[in-house]
Length: 252
Length: 252
Image 1 (cartoon, rainbow over the protein chains, first blue to last red):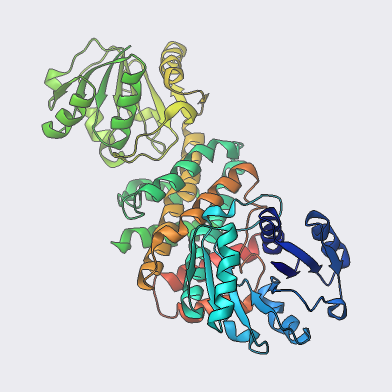
Image 2 (cartoon, each protein chain N blue to C red; image 1 turned 180 degrees about the vertical axis):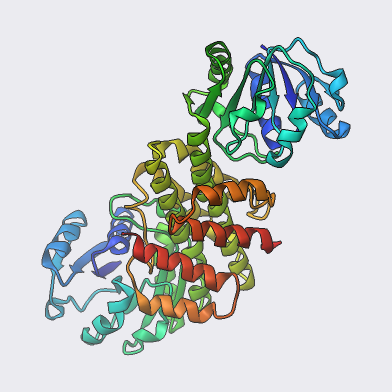
């Protein structure tokens, strides 16, 4: 298929690379900043543009992958497009693309960092489209890079996005806090690597209800008090420790 | 070496299996509950006991691996022992074993669940002993099952334990909350598996400062407000979302 990428951030970059690898053509990469567009275009043997006046109007699919808070205003600047226009955002309704005859959502359920290549084959793609024909085309494209493609409406996608905030963004923040604590103690973060890996691997084979360990899950007040004493007035560690310990104790 | 295991929980079970696998002998397994002792003793070709009167006094090492809040009282019931007595707790000082001539701490820095076998080779072991001779013996035993063995005093071990609470226990609680949210939406937790794996793998190759993604890290108030609206009055989700989002926004 002939595709235009609108955006050059983490999602656009990883998606573009995966699409090119399986034989699709990225006709153009748009970014407000021509240098960003050019960097990604070079990776994809594509053409960089920074104005919608240059937009190639013969593509099959236009993937709009930009920051959520600029999506609506950017979309309003687009010219009339005959191909399918889709966005990749978890928490934005399909309606934002109502101006286009054929439109949809292609939400890759993964975390993307520019410098860490993602293997898409197991990444779930949640799809939505305003008509059956567009859905079939988006599904064909998604299936070409992933084995896990399913339909989800805007409400389900929003709920999925919130769960991802907990399972990915908040998890990474816990890693960050843990790393800062260790650094203050003069111990290397690398010590935590086996624990981080095991915690993630375990929850994939068992259920998170069964894998909870630690002082809060045993309601071990002696250790909890000792930890709170060590974290006294050390924010945000003390209050997060309290909040999450109480939540673990009261959840079951 | 000849070893006696005092305790039959997750840590004792996994440690016992690893020690037997590399050729050590577990002379006895003690538990208050003889059935628990017997279950583990069977796995280790060992003998189950439920009274310290039966304790074999000729072992090289006695590993006390019981819940933190019963450790002190259990230790006070032990007879005079010539071998090295050590515990495996992150947040309990070495002094709790002062009654014994030779004593120490052997802290395996990992999360243990009975039904998930741990590969110990990369698990860090933090050691402490009251004399050089005991330290050498504990180090030899730890080295026989792990490549990562280092000294840590009781203060460092306590700090390491708190970081593990964040990087493992609180992380698992995030998985749990995420799983509950998905369940309420009729979506399977399996959808999150690739995201959970990627989040953990990424932080091991990059640093948690660089891998933070999501609405809070972009300070995207539109999405944050949308999520808070969807979580309204849904506790503990709403307050944890607020607390951690604010913490991410203000950390850098």
